[in-house]
Image (cartoon, rainbow, N blue to C red; front, side, top):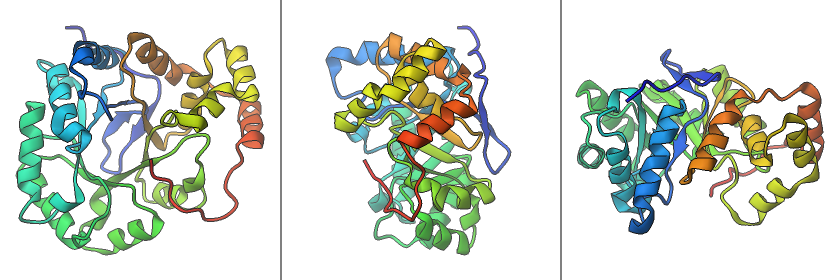
Length: 289
């Protein structure tokens, strides 16, 4: 197997680790046996094209996504930056180790590069932090973060012992959902904790269709000789502060996603997009898909 190519855009985590700005999401993957082989090939192609960060979770298909990823990375674990997420109810001191070990078994590996608390639940953050730090000491995870945390959650986390060891916050973020730009994203940037954007193309539905059919996006795509979805993705990673994790289960979509990392949007492009999809002017509730 050849070495993955390097994507032109990178993001540096707070511990100095460099990750590709584009990774691969796996939500809903692994749940349909009829397309399993195609999904595995898509993930493997994505790795070859430089999207070596793969995000999954114990929640996705009740572990079926993790098992699929494990099959896709077999024989090339060291080429991949592997991310998984723990259920909130499994994030206590007496449960997080078992949850992590089960994820590792499904993934066929001895370690996670990044382990995230999927969303905030009833278990105290202090307890989850202690569990994450213990997993780090045991070598089962190399670093940890959170997901679906708003700014007040992040501020609370940061005030706790070892809370600032959180390296990222994975949230919904795309051109049609810019609320985090008002306060959450600047707060994280100040602390060198990049945003990991899930559903960077919007997760299907009317909003996704609106973005893909928008006249301004289509015009900009035509000028760059690419498809609208590639402009939407290039916009999401326009800075060095966002890692986007689009999902693709078909070869064509994988190639289009990877190519988006090479698109350089101009200031004029960005201004035109701001006019149609304006920046937030006030604090908005955190969007969750």
